[in-house]
Structures are given as structure tokens and as C-alpha cells.
Image (cartoon, rainbow, N blue to C red; front, side, top):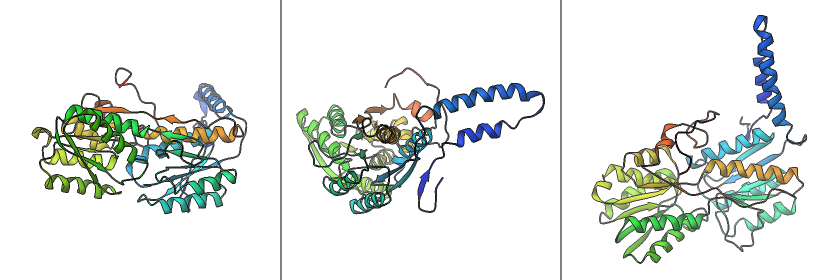
Amino acid sequence: MDDDQGRTTVDSAELTKGFQRRGMLTGAIAGSAAAILAGLASKARAAEGAFPEHPRWKFVFVNHVTTNPFFVPTQYGIADACKLLGCTYQWTGSATSDAGQMVNAMNAAIAGKADAIATCLVDPKAFDAPTERAMNAGIPVFAYNADVPLGAPNKRLAYIGQDLYKAGYNMGLRIASEVDGGKVALFIATPGQLNIQPRFDGAKDAIAKSGKPITVEEVASGPTLNEEISKVKAYYLGHQDVKGMYAVDGGTTLGVAECMKQYGLAAKGIHGGGFDLLPRTLEIINEGECDFTIDQQPYLQGFYTVMEMFMFKASGGLVGPADINTGLKFVTKDTVKPYLASKTRYEGNSGEAQIVASTGPVGG
């Protein structure tokens, strides 16, 4: 639920209350129903009893694009883990990748005595001081989705998210396999930000090492979805000699896909692709109008981060901090159908809690 300060919380007692409501049965069915409910309630109590009674810890997630659809499944992952473990959370930060607003949100979390803070380290230096202040105040800090380079002075405990440079490098290898030569546009929403700049760098390095006569043109597309989509279309209309258009963020990838479809670019031999699983991007890939997108499992970036926060608190700091790579998987026309066949919290296109049946062989 949301309170008047924008905090989103999940009550771990909801499940038990649900059983109680469903247990108001009378008459002949009461005996057998009670036995079933007793079994269900036993399982619920077993789950709740996995850890000793603990405070209802509050975890604050500081994000750089709080309203971006990419992070819908991340928020579901946070909510589900908090419900499982009996914790609460706040989703805050900036809607426009403003590091100053994010630092202010971290400072507010410190002043509010949050039990742990997770933040996207999109700036190489801006978060060093607030991270140190939090740690000195006994508040553990974790990075998710974006991290500082290895050896940087930031004292965050662990990073949960994709290996960004490696993901970009693998995309660059694929670009070099699809494009023989000529101009390739490589779009980046906010150059320099650490959630996407490593991907750009990796892609550019892989293309350079391929030895192919490909010229990479960097194009900044902006922090909001409307900007990204319009910037891609404007770029194509002014550069119709381009051989490929690719993006290192989800919003701009949607822009690439929309542009590819609108102007029939696949039929003209122009290639395109990018990152993340926005529903329209997946539909256009399924139609054969765009080559691929890359899944980095945003749900797990929320779920695993809460798990690490909880274990840090539950163990007195002995257990929890561990870097987790949430993966890299190319989604193409051949593999996209399972994503389109189901609507789930795990991909962010449904709010319903459900167990999803497998749609085919395991693997990707």
C-alpha cells in the first residue's frame, strides 16, 4: 500500500488474514475445509517461522528514473521479497537521472534512520560521501542496476545487477556479425552514467576489435521515453545511409524498434537492437522488424537486493554482501514468444501474483 509520504509497504500478515477470512465456513463442509485450511496455514506459518521474530525493517531504494517502465518488475521484486520476509520499503530518487536529487533522497533516508539503502550508482563520485555517511551511521548500502568501477572509493557493500561492460561487449560482437560495414548509430540515453556507459564502451570496443569497417556514431537520446523515441526517429530521417541502429538502454531500444517498424528498415537491410523487455519492443521483434533485445532480469535486481539487505540485518552483518550478476540473454524472434505468451509480475506486464507454467525447453 502507499502512505501519504510515498512509501510503499507490504504487510506480511496479509496471507494469514486471507486464510482467516476464507476459514469462516459452517455446516457440513466445515470439517474437510478446516483440514485443508489447517494444512495451508501450517505452510504459511512455516514460511513465516524460517527466521526468528525480527523488527519490521525498512529498506529504501534510491532510483535514477523512478517512473521508467523498466523498473516496474524491479518494484514487484522488492515488494515480493519484503512480503516474504516481513519488511517494508520506500521507492524514491529522481525521475530524470538527476544525481543531486538522488543524493538528497539518500540523505533523507539516513536522517529517517532507514535500516538499509539500495541505490543505482549512476555517477562515479556523487554517491561516495552519502554512502560513507550511511555506513558510518550503521546503515548498510547496496548498489543495484548500476555500479562504480572496480577499485573506486565508494564503500557500498555489494552490487546486484548485470555485468554491464560484458553485456555491451556481447552486443558489440553481435553488431559486428550483422553489419559488414558503414555507419552504425549507437544510442545512449544519458552519456557518462554508470548504468549504461559501460555497455556503450563494451559495444564500441567489440566493434573496433572485429576489424570490420564500421563507423560508430554516438547519439545521446535523453532521460525520458518520449525524448528517446523522438530522437531516434529524427536521427534516422537525417541519416538514411545508416546500416544499423542500436541502443544501450530500454527506452531508446523501444525508439529503435518503433523506428525500424515505422519505416520498414528491416526490409531495407538495416539492423537494430538493444536492451530490456518493454512489451512493445518484444512485439516488434516478434514481427521481424527488429533483430534482438537483451534481458537483464530487472525483477531479480529488486528481489535479490532485498534478500541481501535482510540477511545482513538478520546476521548482524556476517552474511549478505555478495555481488550478483543478474544475467544476459539475447531475445530474438526465435525466442521471444514465451515472453509474449504470459503476463507476469516477473516481466512487469501484470500485477498478479502467480506461478507460471513452463512454455518450452529450459534455457535461452
